[in-house]
Length: 201
Image (cartoon, rainbow, N blue to C red; front, side):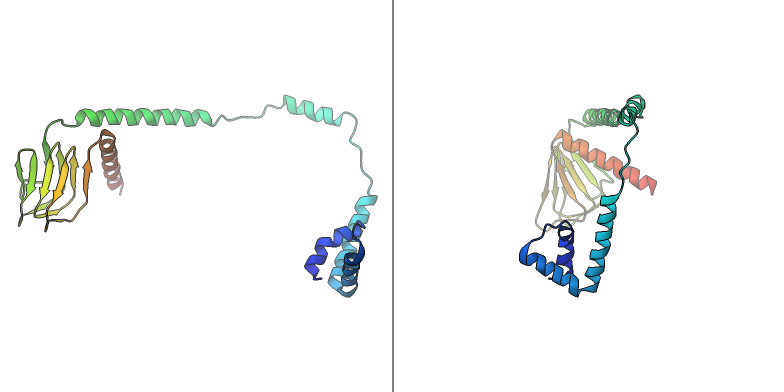
């Protein structure tokens, strides 16, 4: 038996709850190990002092007095739900108003937002970047499609439309097709926060 095992059972020995061969092993270890013997003696003194200690009785009416004092105590309570509900409502209202603004500002006809017209061919609700041409800048198309045969040095976003990348075409930025109102709101929110973050730098 090692010291760790013995110390787990030392209280049982002091309480006279160990029997037989196991008790003999514990007593034999204590006899042969000075550290465990010292610990056993100290623990025995603590148990003896606690068992012989005089317990003080609480004064008459102590419990009743404490309970009465607690009943009359006015503890400050903070309702954490009120600010949470208030801010949640404001956030939902702002998001709703923003989405209405986005929805009303969305063109329901074909439109193109581009940095320049150089390198672009626009015809029949389509924007074409021909082979051998390079367009520099971002391109946003509403209610139409983009056909990329050449090179685009920027991002392309098609709202209620498609992006067709032909073989050999090169787009250095990201492309995004957005065909639902919630996706459009998300896109404009993302653009808004990017603009705010860039302004704060």
